[in-house]
Amino acid sequence: MVKHLIILAGGASSRMKQNTLETSLSKDTLKQANTRNKGLIEIGEQNVPFLHYLLYHVKKAGFASVYIVIGETDTLFQEVYGNKDQNNTFKGLRVSFVRQYIPNGRAKPYGTADAVFQALEQYPHLQTSTFVVCNCDNLYSLQAFKNLRETQAQNALMGYDRDNLQYPLERIARFALMKMDNHGFLLDIVEKPSPIETDHFYDAAGKLRVSMNIFKFDGQLFYPFLRDCLVHPERNEKELPTALLNMVGEHPKSVKVIPIAEHVIDLTSKDDILNVDAYLKTQFPHGLDW
Image (cartoon, rainbow, N blue to C red; front, side, top):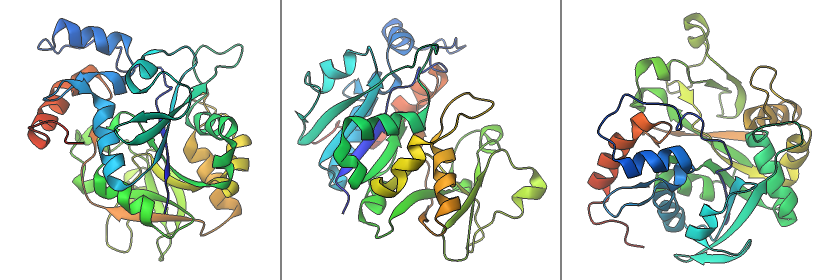
């Protein structure tokens, strides 16, 4: 079973830093939202970083080693999870850090495919290991982590039933849809499909499946596609779905879609903070029992 997990936390958190009409946030919370990575915003009954809740599920699922991709000048993650670059111990997890360096001529990191590539470059043993990748600003369930850790598939991703996502409808309509074959192997991911196109994306269970950016990869197979990933022409970033689909194109039936029907808590902007805080206080009324 998989024991390594890469958490993507090196982004600029630009949407979190945008202004909000929400007036109920405290001055301290606003300051954190404007100056910290989203995963480090303190929240919930114990007022701990959001990433604590994710790591709680990670530990309960049985992972041993966590690699947190952080900005090249970030210091706060190490203040929270361990001051060494490698092999810190946090709540029974072994935590190491990946610096996502920004190339000359760019103002921000090169995207999610680059983040995972830099992780595999800085920790070469991952190039011959299987590992899970996820965002730092989504709270994936214990079941989702278990499914990916325990699957026999060489590569996989969670396929979320769109009907169970509790985001605003206009946001859900913008989610990319996954197309699978009759055996559940990924064929394609299409961004912003039209209503007519959407009719062709229902799976064998009659569901539309979306990705919430939680994957399992075989490092040996995936590494060259990370290395050779091209920049998205519009967003000017190297994106994981691009590398993933390039791998599927050369290796059909290499990526299994694991169906799941549940909501995923998301901490993208200041407008999400109060709802996420209320959810965490309901689900973890006594905090985290590590």
